[in-house]
Length: 133
Image (cartoon, rainbow, N blue to C red; front, side, top):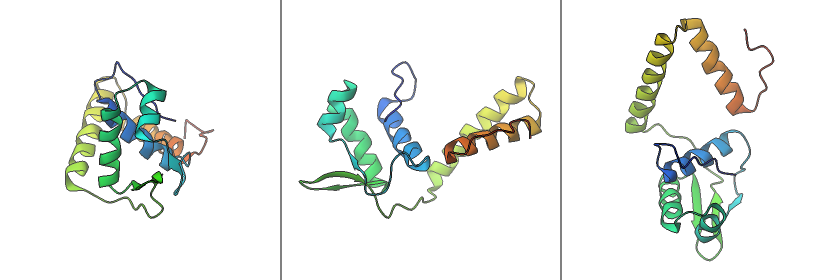
């Protein structure tokens, strides 16, 4: 359900946030789907409940999930991705770092476009049979 790498420099709560968003994008999590409670998820993943709570709070702030008191936490049925200026700058910075790294590895512009296209297809759940095109 959640891809967590404890050796990663990315904070665990952020990895949980990213996993939920990726799961929604890939169709692995559907609008209205119930998520494990903070305690359940903390126990399943052997993590501190505060870490899970922090991730859930951020996801709720971004309107990705909704918590219904006494009923649980669900993927928001009316979640609409929104453009947040600070997040846009973060994304641009990540792309820039990746492009610079790819350039120094010898990738050409077309190679980078191909990688991006392949990743988008992967996230959309489309198998890439023609990786060279």
